[in-house]
Structure formats: structure tokens, C-alpha cells
Image (cartoon, rainbow, N blue to C red; front, side):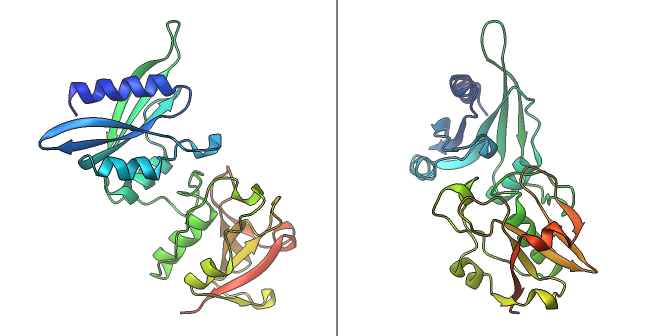
Length: 245
């Protein structure tokens, strides 16, 4: 990363403070430059969502070599969600920390991470919607335990309260090769769909049944965990689905 690129990243990060900035580094004809992109996240929990349109426009400007974003008021140390998303992108990630000060916000430190094959643990992973959430946990369990790749539909944080969305619709379930089964005949690997404080009145939480009365799931804003499937979890269950093989 050239000093000019780093200076452009720092200027963008300070200008966007206290929101996270995001952008990309591109190389064209042997020259590197930073392209600032819009952060289209709509909730604080999303942190940053790089505009797909801006990303596509940047691809026309050269080869994208790195993804960039800022960490306002916290160190540039990558979160678990950053590490997982970096792996998914297949590109290095540049993270710059911006801290408040008497003279205003200023860059503090910068870290660069690269894909290394990292996988978040199934139990104890941090929450990052769309990257490390309940459906991501179901997908990761199936990939690791069954060698099955389930679809990964796009989803915005809070979709269950937007008045229209239903993530677990017929198309998503069909694409995942999941078929409905009775809740009285649970088998390991079954996907349990629950409804928890959903303004849309639709299922908005998924868990994997592990057997022996236990589920693996990831509640919004918490660490992923194993829990006994009973009481409240059974009360909010709306359907059970089994992979068709």
C-alpha cells in the first residue's frame, strides 16, 4: 500500500466518522489508488455494507486488490466477522482505526489481514449479521458435518421487522433441499425454524437439532451456543425441516 493510498483511506475514514467507511484498493496499469465506496448499512449492527453498485463500478476502474473499512473508536484489530468475511472475499482486508480526540477524529492504527483458511467455531462465535448469524451457523454446520453447501440468500439486519420480508420462504427452503417433517420425529441435522419477536409475524430464527434434546443456534447479538431444546424454544417453534439428501 503506497503512502498516497493510505492517506486517501485515512481521509475517507475521518470524513465518515463516527460511521464506518468502506472502499476498495484497485490497481490499473501498474498504479494503485483507493476508491471510496458508500456504506449502505441501515442499522448500527450491520457496521458496514459496501454498496454493490460502487463495488461493480470500482471493478471497471481496475483490478480490486483489497477491501477497506474503518473501526471508529476501537482498535483496528479484526473482529471474527471481519476474518470470516475476508475469507469469503478471497482478498486482503485493510482496517483503519479512527479515534476521537481534542482536535477531532484522527487515524490511530492500521492492520491488514489476508485469507488464511480461517473458520469461526460453531460454538462461541461472535454475532455479525449476514456473516455470522443463525442461518450462517446452520450453513456452516451442514458444510462441516454433512459436506453440504446450503444457499446463502442476502439479508439485511432487522429484515424480520420491515413489514414485507420472509427469509425462510418456499424458494430458500426448496433451494436448500429442505422438506417439512413433524416436530415429534426430530432427527439430528433437522433445521428448526422459530419466531422470536418478529414484527412481520414470520419465522426469523434457525437452529440445528443435534440429537439428545440439544440444538445449536445463534441468537441475535449473542454468542452461538448449544441449548436444551425444550420450554421456550419449543413454544416459539413454527416448523421443522429435513435435508432431502
